[in-house]
Length: 135
Image (cartoon, rainbow, N blue to C red):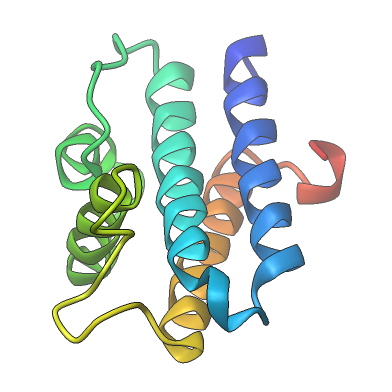
């Protein structure tokens, strides 16, 4: 495994660990969404790096997914669209990462966490590494 690939995965794992620390706080559900998006983005960039493809300077998950779908197939594009919207909005005061019905619920946050965790686990399986080995 390339050194930068491992660094991308470590950074993704850090986002997942951050989520685990705040997942039960209903005031931080938008922050869970932000870190879930970041975890998935970094996982995709790890796959891109490992396949020696130039990493595009974009943050949109669907755009990155175009580069990794040959390896990471069957990811939930609807969740990626939601996470992209929350990621952008959470960076600016006023919007604070809102869904059409308002701030993400704890159930929404749990769904985002599970999605991010599953993507990280898939990437670790592809690279045949144990998640604990990169933390």
